[in-house]
Structures are given as C-alpha cells and as structure tokens.
Length: 130
Image (cartoon, rainbow, N blue to C red; front, top):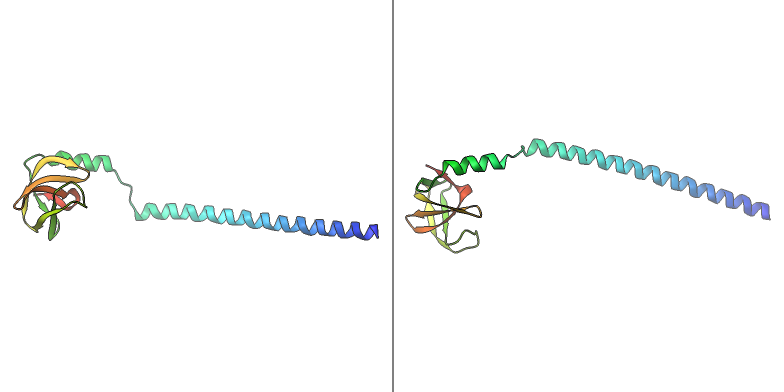
C-alpha cells in the first residue's frame, strides 16, 4: 500500500511539474510576443507621426510675428474670444479674409488681436501672418 501511495505521489508530482513547465513556457511566449508587438507599434508610430521639433517651429513663428503685424484667419469663421481660453465668451466671429492686428501678446496658445469686432483673443493655430 505504501508503495502504491509513493508511486501515485511521484506521478502527481511529475504531472504538476510538467504543468508548471508548460505554463512557464507559454508565459515566456506571451511575453516575447508582447515585446515584438510593442516594438512594431513604436516603429509604426514613428512613420505615422513624424518627429516634432517644437522649439524651432515655435521660435521661428514667434520671431516672424511682431506687434502690429496684420494677420488673417485660416478658416471661414474664426471666434474672437474675450479671454485666452476656448471656454471664454465669444465676442463675435471673423469671416475669412477679415484682417486683424496682432497686439504683441501671446498667452496659452492664443494671440491678442484687434479686429473689426473689437479687441480679443484668437487661437494662434488658426491664424497666419498676411
């Protein structure tokens, strides 16, 4: 009887070890696959989103725009805002071709301008120097 229990115990031990080995082998494969997927996603993101050089672009754009420069909207309708925030009250809309004068102040991605509707703020990404 003892002999049978020892054999059964050894058999169960071997099955458990084999199961653990299989689980570890499967886990290693999963980790390898995840690593390959992450590398592929990283490479894909580089091709989709070109490397940005914000400092050079911003300083070049800012150096081109000076107080008193005439600007115009890149859109058909551009909101003139009371504060430098997209959530602020609208003072009106500027139609495509309406000119505005840059007042020399930039804050939080907005330019302070004077336009036909009065003085306010516009999103700097939506205007260009004329």
